[in-house]
Length: 88
Length: 385
Image (tube, rainbow over all chains, first blue to last red; front, side, top):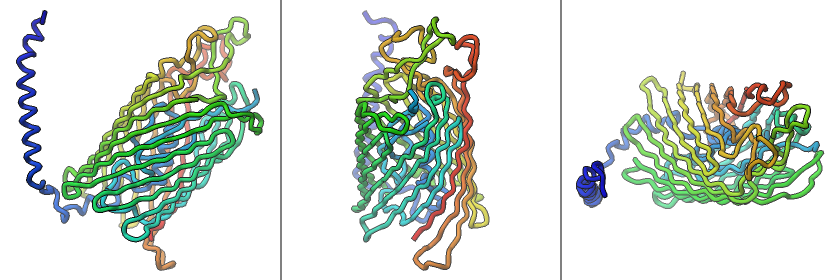
């Protein structure tokens, strides 16, 4: 038997689904017209500066990732790739 | 056993080396050569050696890369001194990669070999990146496959192969230009490992009333499957005084029970056109593997056991600084520019359930928690041509 909370939530679910569907439809229809870049090519001077690069020094970043990976339980999502082992 | 203790962690990531988690799909990587010397010194362990990375385009669509990496290891770490003796060894790694650009799509593939006396590793990777929406958005997908062979060495003499391990890694990435000064990068990875996933040298500690110290050491037994997932988000913001601020957060979780958070912030300042200065701080915290223990109540008290401190609960802080000087050599004429770079990082790890068994105490519980301080230095020179 549904409790008080589920009775309150149940009518809200179809409404949320409907709104989500409309939003998705809107996005799909929006795909029919090309998206205009909101940062024009001539406005990307700062973004093109080497200091804005996420991997300015790949050889150095890869090495530091390796230093951490062999000493920690976590790995991945750093943008480097490697093989072998870490030794202690 | 007079051999060595060495943690063998196979590390995988799906984005092609050098591309980075957030790359630009519609351009090939720069032609450049980097020559690096690295040195890690801490906790009785010294690892140093050279590395060379060479990238070269061939025409407008192809780029090739090769990287050589070497670790010369001299270890007298706590893991080694507890039950074995100090050792020296060398690990070498070769990375081969190729990038192919077709329209706004960049295909990358490569192979990595890593070898040392008791550990061989082969890795193949493939990555595809696509830029869209006027080059404001880049999405990437990657797959990496690894095959490892784990062996045992005693007194510098190879003994036997003890097992194999297979690895698979999938990744998706997104880079997004948010404003004319702000970049966003998102990355998600899932990896799966099967086979021999522990070090043959590592042991566990258990209570032994018949031992003078109150404890003894025995073989460890880690599970032979592991599945993990990592998600990260990074932002980079351009500051009007020719500087950049960046932040990065990563969450990791796996089936061994490890949950980890990583937070990193960095600041880059350009000075006098030729100088670039960097400063960074990185904080890391992890929950232990659910079968990890510093001291088990008795031998074989549970199916899976490990005392690898990499699986313990700990937090760490890394502070780093770096400097880079750009120059334009008059010779040879085909070199456009070069940089001289130096960086220094100090790493401190505070273990919360791994005790220093080299320090005598009435009982194991009275031994202090272990801490590690390490200095990491890099010196490298880069050329663009």
